[in-house]
Amino acid sequence: RAGHPLRHEEREKEVSRESARRSGSRVVTRAERSSSGARGASPRSLGDRRAPWARAASGGVDVSLSSTLPALKPWAEAKVQKCAGAWEKAAALAPNPPIAVVDLVPDEPSSPDGALSGDVEVKKKKKGPFETEFGAFIYDKGYRQLFRALGYPGADAEAALALERLNGCAATLAPRDASSRVVLDVSCGPGIITTRIAAGLRGYDALVASDVSEAMTKRAAEQLDTLAATTQVLRAKQGNDDDVASDASMAPLPAFAAVRADVCALPFADASVAAAHSSAGAHCWPDPMRGFKEIARVLKPGGVFVASTVVLASPIREKYVENGEAADARAYQNGVWDVNTPFWDADAVVEMVRESGLVDVEVLKEDKCFVMIAARKR
Figure 1 (tube, rainbow, N blue to C red):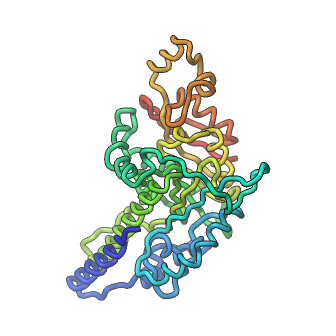
Figure 2: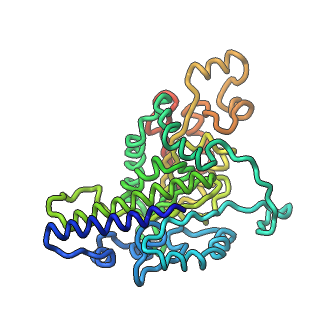
Figure 3: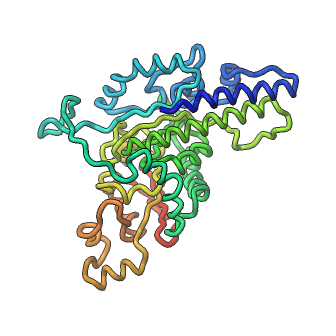
């Protein structure tokens, strides 16, 4: 991982010193800001455990690798424990350790019953165009912007629409228990929407960015690192400069984690996340129905799922019907649809999500080929 968080650390110190010099006040340390409640705290003391994933490590801070993750399946927990020691030692020494990217894609089954083993030699498949670091960069800086032609409202507007439902759900969740409120961002890509949602989340303790592509997951982690460092610098300036007005953008950020994971075999335990989100991802999944079922499995009762995806334009559907290739959504899904191909229409997406076991499925917005849906776990 690049060493940019250290530069953020230096920049933060410089801004803090300058602000203190102008105002005649002393620099407030991170430990003091944390103890004063600036970041908030959860029943799991996540406010004191954010250092391993996003912000500064300091004396007395817990650098447990799993501090921000929701409950894991046994095989995933075993994977985390294998690398926990090395990570915790490194994080404890770093002044501002970056978000760790944890690989929790399951190994191939070693027996007919599907038992998992770390001893299985897995053949490396050829990476797709957006699974390389360069591809992730291109997707972030150019390709995703082309989605506007499909009806996508733009990153800010899409995130705002998703946040309205996600934050609304937080207020209706059951009273807090021993577990934290985690939002899972599935198929996060390079973090374009992830960072915007992270900045606007309210009522949650942590956000976990997840993608099956290692390059995409790493880039999302870097974007969350940048968001965390920038927010901390601005908050330091706000705390030392009376001219900087307090606003909602300075609300405490959730803790962050980044996990490489397959949506069709999520490493998280049943009922372990409070909400889930996916932007422009479902049509890229090799088995969308299985992916939706996995999301339904990991959601807590009452948890919400918000997702955007792509559907065929009306003229294209008409062509499929005229040519006899697909008469309806089911025929298209079973005989024509392939990975990274639009779904038939919004109703087809709603039906798949409903079949996964989620309820109250509704279309939040539809424009050209863009569809955003929301659903809830009973």
